Image (cartoon, rainbow, N blue to C red; front, top):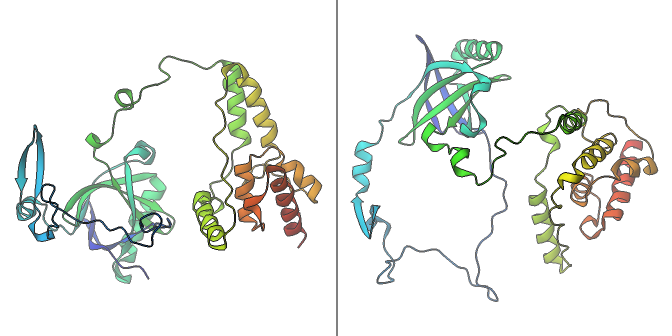
Length: 325
């Protein structure tokens, strides 16, 4: 069972409920250690004096703010601690806003909020249900590990979720940061209508369990292949950009392909097809990358060495076999 990373009280108005904070996500990235090429020697990172090259003990390190021109303001660790926010144990909801008003760019990390005991479950559930029915999110500030955060508290099914938010001055303005923006460019009505049809054709229910980190899977396949001394097949590069002249043709072909593309159980109007031959027609328009993902989900053996056509046949056969079993 997960351990709480923070405990305190959640307040809204004059109502208070003791809560605990739990990390909601975890990292599944494969981590590597560093070695010098051609040897078995580990490469380690050390803190060294830039002038003498000698290693420096952690306790001898202070922070410096760069003023430019080689000048720094030196700050001791205890000076930072003296001005850090106090160890507040309160998440004080100061306002409620419409859920869709908080743009995704502001979201940073996600935590679960849980009542600290069974005796607080009723007040907790009261807030959760009220937020869910009103489609609102609570805005608050609180302190975690000596740092103050702006947070959003919103309702999921059975649980309250706390998102740490970026402060307004941390979010970059796309007008100032991006080299190219559409500006006053407008799409033609025929193109826009066809693009909307494509969006509708590919629309489905949100089922996160149907999506996989295909790169992480390929990393594991790479490690397994190298361990066995097998050849590693490089992945396909990105497709070429769509030419404006060919835009309508590309949109229409995408819609035609979407009609037979497998998208998961939530797909609107999805038709199941029996037999490998019909299955091959369903996957005919998929790229090698998409076929590789399906082959990985279906645990097709030897998929890393297959061509696109071989993957299409293998995926169709595997799906037909699964449907028949």
